[in-house]
Image (tube, rainbow, N blue to C red; front, side):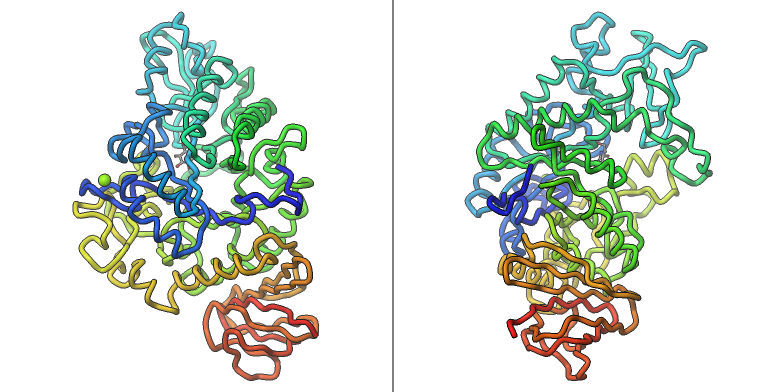
Length: 546
Ligand code: NOJ
Ligand code: MG
């Protein structure tokens, strides 16, 4: 995973786009997005200028957790299409120069997976140990105090065989036992199945959950838990996650991927503090994965806090460890909902100009916000199990609005979740025609990244700033680019080193000026010293040779 300047891999300079397949494009009128729908919309990725598409799970699934409960690791759910549809999508994407990343869900399968049916059939079944079975505690009840991420005990009693099985999520998602070599081999075979078909990598679901403490000891109780908090927060997941043995599994996955050509990527979904996160890069001898960096998802929208996060994250990266940044995904509130429409533009500039691989969540390029879900349309099992705690993920999974036609062009049927109410104007077609749209801003940012190595692969140094200003310089060879962002609603100033510079891009037009006071237009040059940032303004400035 070392990233010497001599060889930049596609996933380092590239930009990833996450598709939630149920909600991207429906092709058969069932109200649920599918593979042929994605294939029909590949031009969107090309127009936007991203390099790779990560598709959330498409495998056969009873959909208890909308595909994160896999009943067959080497198939395609009929709702999404067929294996032939997938092959066609992959070929078409590759033909357009796009990489395709699948979601791999190794911590748990569906309870309908034939492996689990065998495992639960008897204590002596050869696949019994492919899942995590334990006797009841001495006094009866679950083996320990572990709590499912979706609430309630992480253990489910199986009457027929008189033992409990572990499930970090729903009881319909039994945890696989990665300490069992046969299970490991079967899962590696599944990865090979997709690599052999040509997929360019995997995003690995809850990688840090995969191995549990060998002795299943209790998790420490969280003394700060109060009613209204998610049930899972009653305990700290010290012994149920992030065990040292997980690193050997990740390294084995990496070695498997390295057996293929084309720099296949492995991205680990890992929610851990920075220092622990860094251990998942592995070492030069045993490289592991690119661990998703969710720092900005949890960050308060505050320039000083984000500057600290950038410094801490950059400072903690191991030698050769490549950074990456994420603003949102299918589990977390959308950025436009968190920071508002004006700041969402600043956030886009931040995401696409920080050092490292950015991942864009579908719809964020249109400025989509969270969509209110009427109570009778709630689908997310997490919300249904723990209602009213603000955990609902449906609002961030609503259909992609494509155009002004019926159902925003998403489906000819009834969409599985409601559309954003502003879809008649906030849709891909309308925004493609509007130079001031969020889509146009994303397109411009991605074009700049492509044109300027300083932005895609250059070094990063924070520039001293205060108040609501966040600023950094990107540098590659002789090229120097300064990004100055106003994260607030009031005009701000920032002092930059003397020298001529050109304005490459502004999040809002016509309002930025240098201390001299003249209004600046995109592409115009001025002497930088003190630059004034309008409210919610972000600027990308290129230093010009003296
Ligand atoms: C993380 C996924 O992102 C989430 O959507 C899912 O519910 C859990 N893992 C369980 O697979
Ligand atoms: Mg469909």
